[in-house]
Amino acid sequence: MTTNRLGRFANRAILGVLAAACPALAGHAAAQLIQIRTVPVATGDQFLTTPSANFGMAGLTYAVDDSIADGWSNPAKGALLSESSLLSAPVYYWISDASGRGFTLPVGGLIAGEAWFGGVTTALQEIDNASDGGFGPGRAGRLSDMSRRNLYAGGFVGRRLGSGTWSLGLGASTARLQAMDGVDLLYAGADRIVQSGSIDDVRLGVYRDAGRDRASAVVVRNSISMMHDVTYVERTSTRTDRNLDQTRTWGLQLAWDRHLRAPGWRIGASLTANRKSHPKIPNYNIQNIPRDPGNSTAWELGFGVARSMDGTTAGLDVAVQPIRSDTWQEAEDPVETTDGTTIPAGGRTIENDFSFFNLRLRVGMAHEFETLGVRLGLEGRSYGYTLEQTNHVEAEFRTQNESWIEWTPAAAVIFRLGAADLHYGVRLTTGTGRPVTNPNQPDRATSGGEFVIAPDGPLGLVDTGVLTHQFWVRIPVR
Image (cartoon, rainbow, N blue to C red; front, side, top):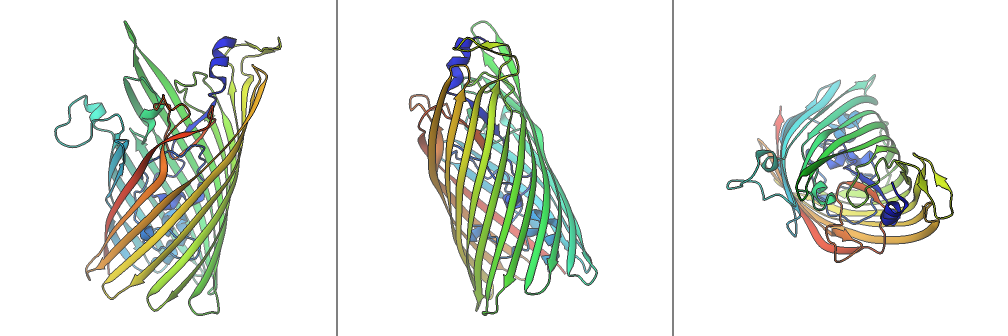
């Protein structure tokens, strides 16, 4: 690699796009996996594949139980299940400005026994990326381009120990993917992008119910392994580049909650830690410097309070996320620097040091009538970071500060029909879009559930929003 070529891309240094750090199941199960974001990309709810009773309450977590979803987050908390049931939770999401959409059809069940408990789910999904022609009748084109199929499967099992105060659980999930929402935006000018790979997640949890006080712990191992075959049409020929995207995450979460002596009041807190390694990041065409690794350490401290009385529950969550990411670019060949020294092959040509401080707020309420339940909620997410970038080739150093806020109002209604519960929820995410650092080059954008990109200048934003509908049915097995 020549000095000129490296210098051309120096200020466009990218750690990479770490596609969707959440596990292959519901977004609720991603509670132990902290997203790292440096651009406000609009992404869909691709990984919302199991229902949540708190969907319409903006996902309240710390002081409000969610017996339908808690077992997927910590398998030992399946002990909260009161009865067995069959479930199906179709999801449709749409990203404005023709930026993508998806449809997911999951089916599964939850088992609540005296000693043993568990759950199983599988889902079929079709993704329509921004460059697709839309799914449904009347589409034309190659079958592999028309049918972007993803398959999901997972389950958990647990057991109450002794007198039932303690519970232990083990869960696993997998996704076999042919499409990751937004990846098509990463390769401007490509004629065709073929994706394949998997996301695998294993978690071991413990839960203790001591009456007023309850505590839990869960350890998570999450692995992302994706491959992108990108075809470019040139003047007289075509070429196909193969790019690998790999991320490995270890996660730990400790949680506690207590029922206060004041009637109906409850508080809760949690501490989450993630250690992420990124052994392989795709060679996006705005970078062209392959083999760029990185490491990240992320923390989250959360606190919640809620009160339930006369059929009404109201609560709020607060979470802060300090995060550090160290990323770099490695030279394929020896590179001469501007001061006359040489960086050997494999040496670091650019180093990016990120310092994040994010804040997440949720407020929500629910009221239960005899045959009807209503939920309302609002989530606000504030992202902010400082980038310190060192270019060893050009002997340059720069800093950059970025921040933005995303808002997600949500609502849901539950109909209890005796033989089944019908649930409809909707949420809208705003404050996101297609980030660009050059307004004249809107294709310089990226997407995915998690990413750490070192932008080369102040970010601009092409506004988009994400509208998600979830309809689920629960049939009790008595």
